[in-house]
Image 1: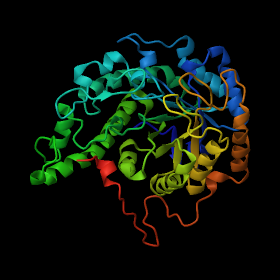
Image 2 (image 1 turned 180 degrees about the vertical axis):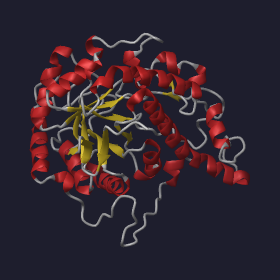
Image 3 (image 1 turned 90 degrees about the horizontal axis):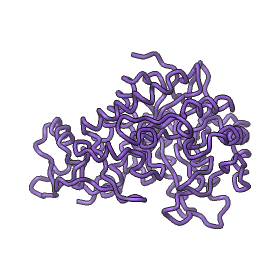
Image 4 (image 1 turned 180 degrees about the horizontal axis):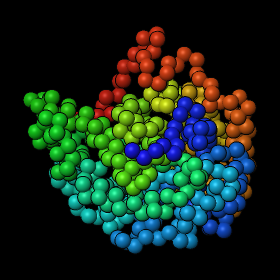
Length: 420
């Protein structure tokens, strides 16, 4: 096994015997002119961020099968070096799925267009994701053909970043995929019926996967919907193993879950599969902050070794109306809600302006927006009280039962397992 270069601990990312607080901000290098990278990164450092986080989108770097682009706006090495020069550590998220408001969530057409890579519905048809600017067929996370394509992609990324891994370079952590939730299609018998997915299901001692609810076959139907948790954890574990094979096994890793009720996911199973913490994403209107607090408490009680908010919305994507028009403190209050509930690290998304987004903290010219002045004040206050050393009173250590014997009854089984 490859020696550990970095790993998550209860205070952040452990690098060279010291813990780096996970106070990150997102900047997408390929969406900013390289001449402006340094100014944007300096502005981030000036606000108190310790880390710059970015996707490494497969679609951008391999637009055609076998043709890779690593120059100009796509010069990942140069960006990482610029971040290090600005005093920032780097977190990379190479997918395969990024979203980031990219076409096909950042996956290349030559991959998702391959039938052997595509997820299948109960009718045997492709599973379409209707996201702007056009719908696209989602991949099967069980497909061996898709895993082979991911293997080739991760190898290319590893070749670019190998000299820049901590402790010798700025890269301290790598994200395993993004917001794994069956691509937001949650019907119990919607997908994935790819032959490789059905083979995984059969390994549990089952026959063919049911394609509709039947009261006469209730046990197998229930096993199928529960299998979706197994499917996601196994797939993410496989992606993690591919990272290992590419030479990236010694770097801390994590996964981020999408917004939604905490009962929608088997967070501990994913943590075991990837060998790192699973955090949450949050884009919350003010009337949702009470429910967000519950999500934060669930995160603090389940995430190990550190509860992370891996996307705390700073701005929003343009497909939907603003979450809080005329509410200049909403983003601050969203993050404060999660910190008060027990989160010990965060990633503000987006820190730096880009296309297909509005409301970032820093312009693409490196100017801090007046609406983002709270960030510097908050991070300075967190440093003053040594925030990452503190623990919320009454919370047991991660993985241990509450000493008071409190149990949570999840009433959202319909949302988690689909509506039969």
